[in-house]
Image: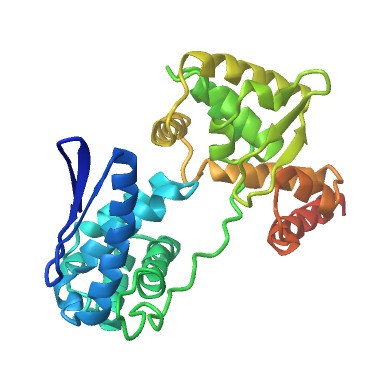
Length: 325
């Protein structure tokens, strides 16, 4: 870290790195001192990494993860989710291994251990930022890595796509259970998910200026695919959005609070094996059942790839065929 201190009327910057000479300079303004300090830190790191092969011995995976977490993950839209995953990784023994000693076998062992506790999809989501971290370390941070240790680690096959739909009576049970919750937002959130196919994060981010009352439309500016969309609202959905916005005026739940409330609601309703995201699946399936075309459903759900929608459309069409025969 650069050390900045006032010396007389000027600000002095000193940058110290092990195995490197001390860099020092004085400035009239503190902002100039800070700017130069940041620039020289990066330059000093690059020169040190280039000329000192011991840097791989002296740098642990933990050091790399912390830097990636603070400089790369923190700028992502879903920063908290990725940061939580990286923080969990930092508590594991593998994080203590040095860059010179780490190899694919270590991450293969990590993968196999995690597969005993979590799903394949979760493991793949955990490995993705770690692989990118090594790419950034080699290409941008100047670490003399001979290869990316995660590049040749075999990824487990993702979990089969869920096709869970609401069974007869489950919607009513959920709404009754939600009405008994102290968290009043769960009832309108369930209705909005079923009526519009909005994701949990999208529902949590609804703002009053997103709603057009005159035409009963709701804008969704922040989406998973980074493509904003505008949804026409049914009367039921419109009323639920108004209720939710009024509740958000006093308190807006966090993602974790919402998740815990959903789990309590589902348990209270006596329903098993149902995720909140399954309500999005239910909504999309209902769109197809109502006769909407693939492009119309995609406009509602925000799917960028029609192939993703096909897994909803085919079972739905088969279901319709079986009921009309």
